[in-house]
Image (cartoon, rainbow, N blue to C red; front, side, top):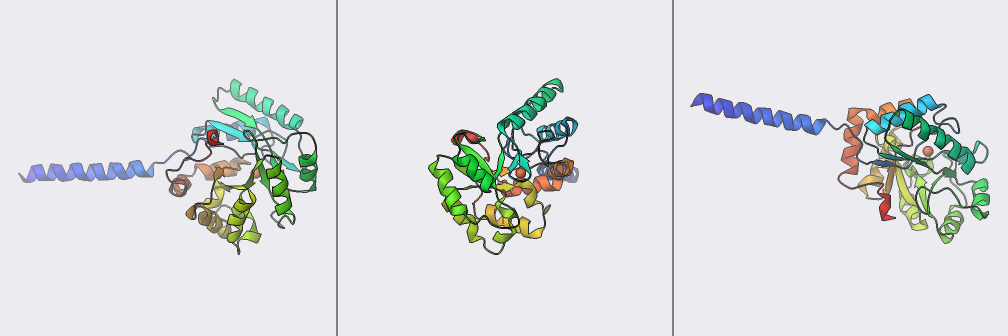
Length: 259
Ligand SMILES: [Fe+2]
């Protein structure tokens, strides 16, 4: 009789530990489409060459990303990328992925700095590069808030665009004013949180702000903002995958079919 109870006890313990192991073994990102990355070779401060691009793409594919939208910077005084420079880098990467048999879908848009050059582009007759339909990815300088953000967002929205504000948690000028996140949304911006921010990669105030945005249900979208292999390694870390899973929960992020 004792031995039967003992066997049952062992079975219960085994099932408890195997459940725990299953819970701990998160190996994938909790979303399948990445809409912010710098994986195109040689056109901004992201991947410098096709070999690095392939490493980054293989890495995120192994993390469960099946579609990625590359978003090279467009910044007046640093990276004046155009549809032509972006598209030719995209074609290079797509061909290399095909050759290496990495079955990931890759498209490209841009990450627009909200500077005077951007206003010129917006007012020109050429359409901006969009992530999907009329959704565009924008960012601000980390040093100073964009002085005419209200006017720019009004122009963007009036022109029919849905602007995304990239990594709102990374702007130091919002760290003492979390109300700014709701104000950005009132202006028409979708908030896209950088996954790396949640891990503390950019420091404690950024992690705190990222967690505030999730805890208050203000995050519309997420992104890896992956530039190089250190970013990839941080995304792959099992402890960090647990953090992503905890903050994103069961909600499905980056499903663009809803837009
Ligand atoms: Fe970025």
